Amino acid sequence: MISLGIESTAHTFGCGIISDKGKIYANVTDAYRTESGGIHPSEARKHHENAKDKVAEDALGIANLKLSDIDLISFSQGPGLSPCLLVGMAKAKELAKKLNVPLVGVNHCIAHLEIGKLMTKAKDPVLLYPSGANTQIIAYEAGKYRVFGETLDQGVGNFIDSFARYIGLGFPGGPKIEKLALDGKNYIELPYVVKGMDVSFSGILTNLKQKYGSKKYPVEDLAFSLQETVFAMLVEVSERAMAHTGKKELVLGGGVACNKRLQQMCRIMCEERNAKFSVPPNEVLVDNGLMIAWLGIVQRKQAAKNYDRIDIRPYERTDDVLVDWR
Ligand code: ATP
Ligand code: FE2
Image 1 (tube, helix red, strand yellow):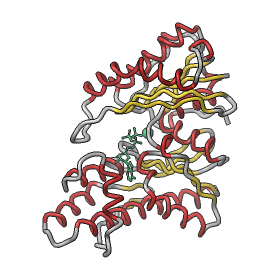
Image 2 (cartoon, helix red, strand yellow):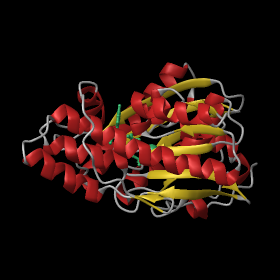
Image 3 (cartoon, helix red, strand yellow):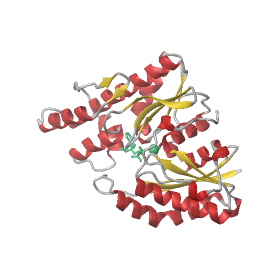
Image 4 (cartoon, helix red, strand yellow):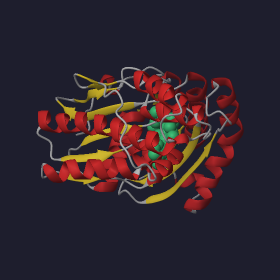
């Protein structure tokens, strides 16, 4: 069985193709970018409208498959921006109807977890999912993927991007802050904000802006201290989720997981508690269609041909989804 999946929750329009055996055929993305990094939903929708046909055609071309080779279509149902989600769903329905194959809508956050499991061979991991818009620590317990901890305000990626933009580094800020941090020599104390199992970044952002404005601190030290502080917060909550659930595997997903220092800190924590740590390749850490195609396979029992009854779910939470495939 071959599945074609479409991602369109935010700035990325993606199309991935994968078989039920996990054979990867293609993973094509086209991202809407602005100078500031901010996302304007109707502009992103226009981007996706323009990109959708080419991205799907390119994916089939790279896969060396005909459209008629596809047995199943899946798409990101949520969470995400409605104008963006609607474009992905329309393209998915167009293809499913043309082929007369089943269609299934899937959850974007769970897709990060399931593709991580496939690519790292983890069986029952805790997922640390730090991305632009989201920051969650997720694991399976009693029929659902539960959110053990999450951000109380913005996603860690948006937080890093905001500070990077403030100091004139442009967008996306994550890779630039990572590079700058390599030259940091001194740790400057910043607020460390873990509340229960949740994290928060807005106060740290204000503090960083004040420190930058005071001109007392080298910007490399600020970048270094930013990473050390917020990554320690994420690692702390991940470790507590592992301790609470008794799980022995940690997997990463989300764009900020591309960061080598975050990966290193997670690896050290896992070594210290005799757990297995794994990171899938960058192309599936960021938003992509491949993880959607794979979750389509995983949830194929829910796929159906009553296309008109399938809709987007912009506000769907990870723990809204009943996990009946494990
Ligand atoms: P979501 O998955 O919540 O829809 P998104 O679409 O905004 O989020 P992703 O594509 O998963 O996000 O990731 C983009 C984010 O990852 C940006 O905030 C970017 O700065 C950050 N990022 C990318 N590379 C790195 C890096 N090396 N270090 C830190 N952050 C990074
Ligand atoms: Fe994502």
